[in-house]
Amino acid sequence: MIDLRRLHVLRAVAHYGTVTAAARALHFTPSAASQQIRQLARDLDVDLLEPRGAGYG
Image (tube, rainbow, N blue to C red; front, side, top):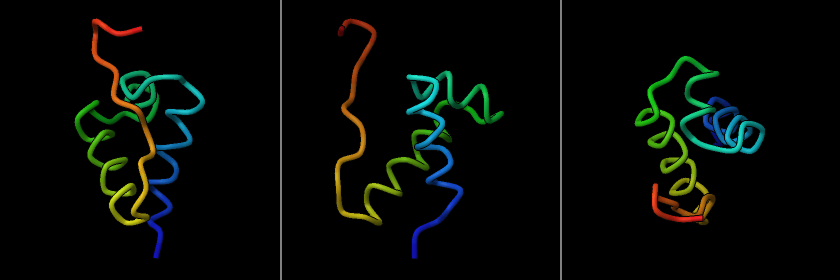
């Protein structure tokens, strides 16, 4: 079963553009938000986000 809280985090990332901004809006730490998305990706067996570091883009 899909955890709706994890989908909510993914939706926030899509809306705010970054995990950090989404985490801030949801009152999570960026690490906690990332963990939720990683777990959702494992649950669905898909890649959801493309990693980007500070030097990319």
